[in-house]
Amino acid sequence: DSKGLYYYSSGRYAFDPKDDSGNPVFHTVTNSQAWLAQWGISHWGDRVRVNNWTAADCTRGANIFGTAQLSNAMINGRSNNVDAQYPGYLWDLDPIAGFRWYDTSVMTELVNVSFSNYVFQPSLGTVR
Image 1 (cartoon, one colour):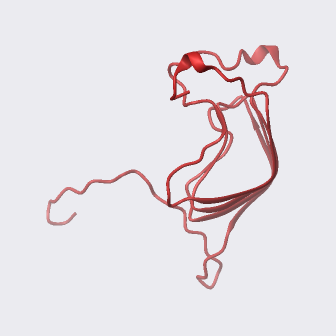
Image 2 (cartoon, rainbow, N blue to C red):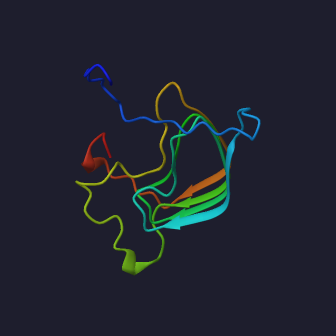
């Protein structure tokens, strides 16, 4: 700051969507898809609705924080795409999961969401 003091930043900067009058609204993501990605969608906002979402061959299909809703989604952990070579090397990836349940400040509603083809690998320990 201007006094030469240092402050710790957790790195969490939330997106606070508002309408033209400054009223809080939901950030809306619709009819979208991702594949061959570390995280299919990652939203660090206060309010989000993700509708008609598809993800395939992603380490994590969806990662949304705040007050959120994920609806009408299909998250496929491993498709038939042999060129994907998924999941590849595991030691440098996030834990493989269709969705990330996070901390107590997150309120996410899942509506009509399907998760498929996630392989249980107990040999990787509790963090995978």
